[in-house]
Image 1 (cartoon, one colour):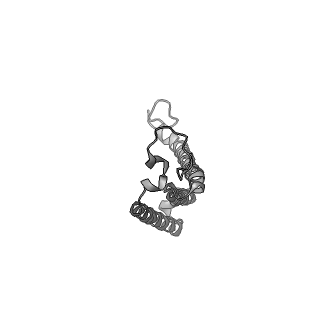
Image 2 (tube, helix red, strand yellow):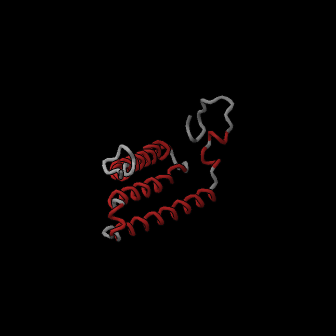
Image 3 (tube, helix red, strand yellow):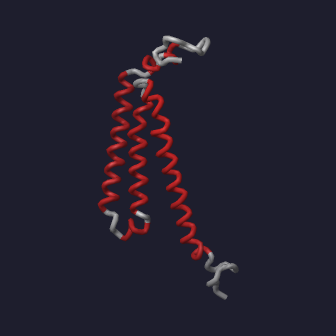
Length: 137
């Protein structure tokens, strides 16, 4: 199947599905581009503020460099979401790698941070239980 609709391999498919650009109007492309740009600017502002205040005591507890990487990856994934507007065949081919890979990396960062938190909190959660080392008697 070609995006331009010159050869069709799907029988009885509506012409709008075969012609990707006829389904997405130019007004919608402008709206989506503006929305994604606004979200990207907010993420970049958040990235700048986390970087600026990375030495404060509150952010030191929350691993500021992991937060910086996390927000940076989220901004990259948001910027790559513009590829979901069907411009050409190349953007359709590379969009999955450029969007799914950063989202997967964000999930890995969340798992690592959750594991770290559970390791740090395990002794505190054992206080007062019969299995805890410092249980009060």
